[in-house]
Length: 152
Length: 371
Image 1 (cartoon, each protein chain N blue to C red):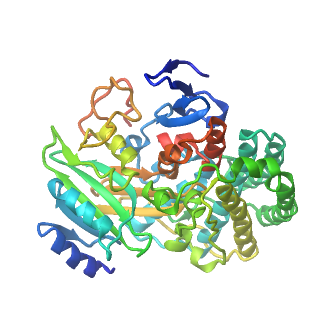
Image 2 (image 1 turned 135 degrees about the horizontal axis):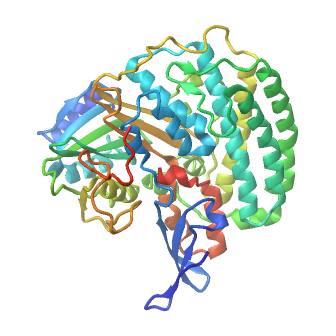
Image 3 (image 1 turned 120 degrees about the vertical axis):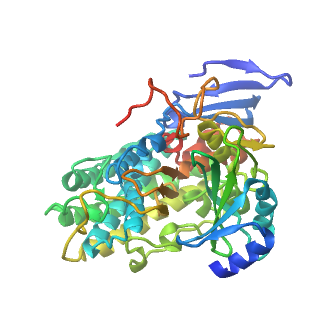
């Protein structure tokens, strides 16, 4: 599908979605609560078939958080980038997609560990890299750790 | 090595493999639930070499951050650097001169050969064949010598800069690479006689650690792991960069999806990479090896993503820029991280020795997973 076709299709799916076409791929900006039904549609619709989730990134925008999903279809060879906005920075919650794309399980654990995003209904949401008793989320912009962080 | 032994309520044994275990190729810690000798569950515990490279990069300039990535997948450091340079070039719309591109591709393919050779040696050792290790390292040494002469380093080359490469090739480069092509061509058939055709190796790998194409995609696997299931995934073919569209090579496929298929994909990729090197080595175009760039690079506000094919699979760099001197947020998509996620699925129900063989064919590099 071309960018335009994708855009029309996704507007039907999520009417509140906004688009950003500046980059090489179509960026879809949605609210976190719309993510799970949209993810199911992206994976299963015959003309979408986004079966390959290759990157999950959590971003701290200081007033809110967002989770960026990079998706590719191995059959139809198109790519889409979905950005889910989580307005509540103190208690960020979004539905897990690990039951749709199994790869998300580890990626979401990483995002939880380093950015503190809580993935609801995740089968095993624990810290991944850091120790279980670690305080804070290192990739957040307001994180301070005078002991381990070297500032340049 | 096995630091803690426990039992579950069903009488299964829980053991720790690693973080200091020869078969985990680094500091990987696996907690395995065993029923007799049968693996019921494998759970990786990560983070022993986590340095938070993503956070570090947020305070490094667009010239500096490239070289931290050499320390992630240290066996494909050149290709990691290339991916990072590509994303900066994309942001600033720098056009790399042809000579720079060709040198990059040559180095990347030599790196891929070196990485696959090291994997081949270590793979043999995982299943109890010690000799291949010495054979592989002998040939890999020749690549390291070539790298040392031109890049100044043997492992973390740090040779790529935004806009091309740091310095021109050494006068001996072409001669030495040609010698190497001749050397490896004579040796590669020996590898087949020594290990590939060996009945013990085949028995140990065939039908072990099987994953279907659908599952491999679902687990986000890339590189030789997913190509062993017959899925088209080579970034060099899907989204060619640095002139890969101009060289002739085949994407290597197998269909079985087992450990032996992954083994054969890597062995055949060595030949393909060798063919790329052979096509380019006597045809390096004249001209500049580096585009003229500003001393201080500032990416415009926006988001940039670039992908490259490392020896282990798809490596991605995702930069969010606010227009400043350093990235606002940077994310590395490392191939090993997703490949490791499939390990439990591959080895569930098999014997513990088969798990070691499967892990060998996944070609895990732990700093790449932990970042």
